[in-house]
View 1 (tube, rainbow, N blue to C red):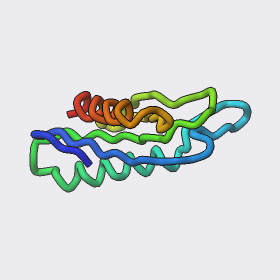
View 2: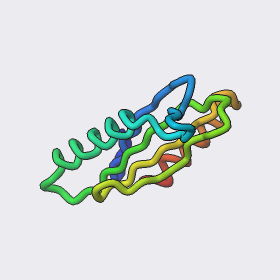
View 3: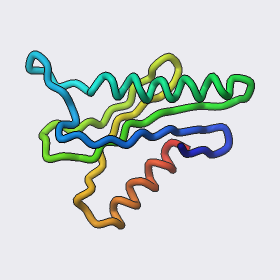
Length: 107
């Protein structure tokens, strides 16, 4: 969890050999992961209900060699939920820069 001022970002990092699931020929996100981060966000929002705040969530997947790479942002019941993939096969300096950019963009 990252926070700055009244902004909070909850990040749930995941690794699966397949970042998406396929059903009837259509690739979709693992819905249980999306519900999980949504629950984290809503619980934090309830915890802070007496304070001014913005709570967002992110599913951060380790990128695989799949053709379909999740990179989406959703607005669910007033909260922003993002899904991103991070390439861990690059130099650490690039990984670090990407993580810094995530923090800057959300906070």
